[in-house]
Amino acid sequence: MFVLGSSAMMSWVFAKSINNASVLSAKYGIVGGFGYCAWYLSFVGSSVVIYRLRLKGYFSLPHMIFDRYGRWAQLLYCMANFYRLYTEVWSNTMTVSDFYGSRVESDKDYDRDWWTSNLLGLSIPLAYVFMGGMKSSIVSDAVQGTFTIAFLFIVLIYMTAMKDDNKYLNKHLEDNYVGSSWEVYNPVPSRAMLSLDGGMDLLAGGAVQGLLSYPFFDPVLTDRAFLTDPRTMARSFMIGGTFAGFIILCFGFLGIYGSMLGNCVNDGVCPESDLNGAILADVKAGKPFAVAKTMGETVLFLTAFIMILSSISTLDSTFTSTAKLLGPDMSGLWSWLNDIVTGKVSIRASTRGESIQKYMPLAMSEATDRHVWVGRLGMILMALIGTLPIMECPTQLSATTISGTVVMGLGAPIYMIGLLPDSWLWTRGTKRPLAFCTSFIFCAMMGICYQVRYSTKDCDGNLKYSYANVDFTPLTIGGGSYGMFLGTNVAGAMVSLVCWALFAKLDFCLFNEIPTLAEVNAAAAAKVKIYVADDQGAVSLIDAPGPAGESPASPGEIELLVTGSHL
Image (cartoon, rainbow, N blue to C red; front, side):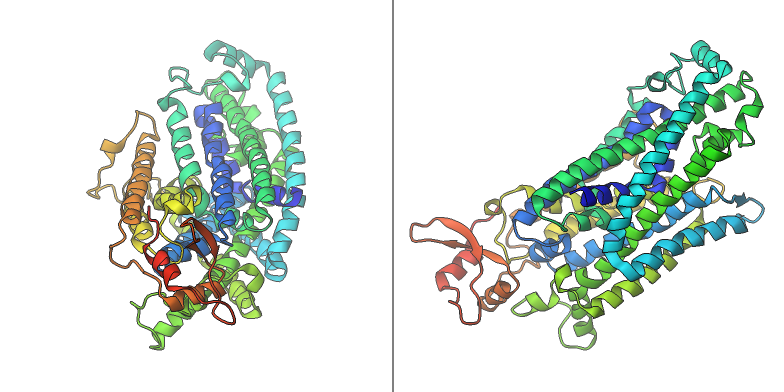
C-alpha cells in the first residue's frame, strides 16, 4: 500500500502543478492554493468509481468502454488519453527549464541553456523507463517522494524565517493588508477572499472537473488503480491523494511569499536588494524560480531539485502509460485497423462472435514482447511530439484547465457504469456506442471552441482567435477571472449526463449491438459475465457459458441476454 500510495502521490506532484499552485496563490492568496488542490479530488473520484468497476470484473478503463460502448468509443477514449499524455510532456519540462535558462524575446525562442535542460530532463526518465517499464517508475516514485517532502519542508522553514525577520515586509503587510500571516493575506484587499471574484470560481470549477471527468482522463492515475486488489487500491489512493494535495498546497506558500515581497518592493517599502537579482514582475507573479532566487542560492538549488524530481516522476509515469496505452490497451484496435486495411472486415462491421476476443483490450498480464516494443516505440514518439507545443508558447496552467474542459464528456459514460448496479443498466455484452460518443463529441466541441476563442494565445500573450464567432459569456457564473471556465464546465457536465442517459435508455438507437449465441460463447472466453434467471425467475450475474466442453447457453438464457433488464 505504501509503494502504490507514494507512486500515486508523486505521479500527481507535477512540476507544472507546483508552478500553477504558486502562481495562483500569488494571485488569490491561500484560496488560489486550495483552488488548484480541487483537481486533486480526482483521487476520490477515480478510487470510488474504479473500485466499483473492478468489482464488476473490468481490468482497465479501455476494457470497460469496449465492453459497454464498443470499438469506436474505445478509440475516442484512447485518443483523449494520448492527448492528455502529450500535454504532460511539454508542460512539465518547461517548468524545470525556467530555472536554467530564459526566453530570448528578440526571436521568440529560448536560449541554449533552457533547451539543454529541457532535453536533458526529458531524456533521463525516458532512458530508465525504456529499460525498466512501469516497475522502475513505481519504485523510483517512492524515492523521489521522500526527497521532495524533505526538501519542501526545508524551503518552507527557511522562507518563514526570512519573512519573520524582514521588519519592512511585516510593517508593510500590517499597514496595507489584513495581517502578515499566510492564511489571511489577500493580494487585493478590496476583493473578498471567499468570493467568486476572489478565486472561489476556480475552486468550484476544479472540483467539478476533479470529481466528474478529470480523473478518467489521466491514464497515469487510472493505470495504477488496476495494479493491486480493489480495497488496497482505494485506501492507497485516498491516502496518496491527500498527501499530494497537501504538498501542492504547501508549494502555494511560495507564491504567497512572492506576492508579499513583490508588492512590498513595488511600493517602495522594502529595498530592491531583497529581490536578490530576481525580476520583480516574476516575483509578484509567484513564479517558483524567481521567488526561490530571492532567498539565495541554496534555496534556489533545493527548489530546482524539487522541480527536477517532480518533473522526472511525472514524465516516467507519462512514458509508461503511453507504452501501456499503445500496447495492451490498443492491441485490439490495431488488429481491427489492420483487418480493415487488408480488407478482412468492413469498417462498419459489428463486434460479433470471436471478434470480441480478437479486438478487445488486453490485460497487462497478457502482454507479449511485441506489445512491449510497440510501447517502447510509443515512448519515443511521445517524447518527440510532446516537445513541439513549446514552439507555440503555451502556459502550464492551460495543460490542466483547458485540456480538462475538452474532455468533460468522459465523465457520465464512465462514472455511471461504475456507480449504478448492473441490474439498472443494459445487459452486459451488448453495446450502446452513442451513449459514449455523443457525450464525448458534444463536450469536446464545447471545450475546443472555448479553447480556441478564449485561451489560445501567441507568444506575446494576445488571443490568436479573438475574432472567432463563439460566445460563452451567457454561461459565465460570477464576475471572477474563472467565471466562464466554471460555467462552461458545469454546462459540460450536464450535457454529458443528459447525452449518456438519453442513449443509454433507448435500446433501438442506431449502432446498438445485440449479441448472438456465438458472441455469448466468445464472451465466455473473454471472461465476460451475463445475466441468467434461475427456476424461480431470480436474475443473477454469472460467467458466460464456455464454448468448449462446457454447457452452451440455453435459448432462455439468450433471450434474457437480449431482452433482459434495461435502464
